[in-house]
Image (cartoon, rainbow, N blue to C red; front, side, top):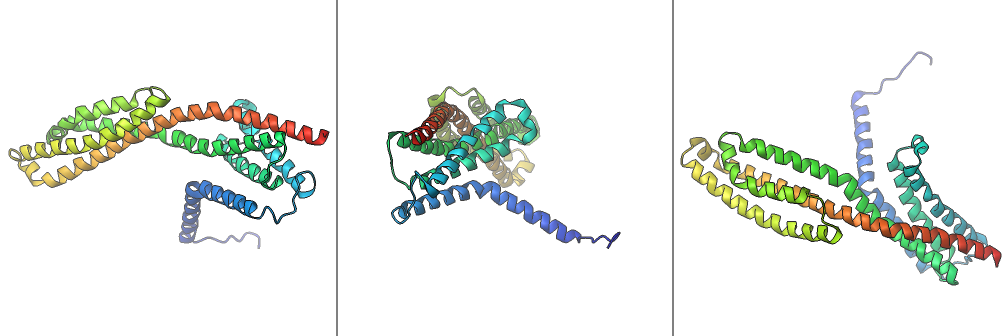
Length: 303
């Protein structure tokens, strides 16, 4: 009927939006894990049933799976082009290309495993298979390193700097500031240490382990020092005496959050260095996979 509109109740619309947001949150958190689980399950099923299937790599379904899997691995090059070719910006955000890169990088190797029916062949096919599996495995590792850096490092540094600013303002404010003064110097020293440039791959990992140990010792020591300061201040301030337990709980919570943020920044700094090392290894593996795959296809059709 023209001119007649149906109004959706506000409560139902909000419920639908909430459900959609909830599903998106679940996908964002568990989507990759679900995909990897399905891939591992398919690989296990393929391995267990390899002797019952009549699949040959040279013809039929096996040949088609090889062409499809190899094509998907070749398409992975598009992600590199997207990052480097400006006019490809119009075809979507980088994160969507990265997601496609990860999905195809898992589907392709599974198809290739079915293509060869989980069996080894001649030398050139084995080299192509091993390179493909190396690229897939290193890609899974790289995905988590990438996520740790780009979704955690810069946000954690910003949060730590904000918390340091809050501490600085608190120290300058009245009675509470006097209670926080004993912890200020050690927290500032920790912040400066963790926000300093990473000292290299091994150095950043050693620094992370050192900060893990140091922050746990620092928490107890600073909490004891703050507790003593509160008790001392309570003898001369009725306000502090009245709220002593709440002040101690507040300081404890702040120390816990601040030191946890220090540990996160140290962890992401080590991830950043590991990601740099991973990239140096992953790219040659990828090039070897492409070259060995092309040579395999050429050799199969030539001989």
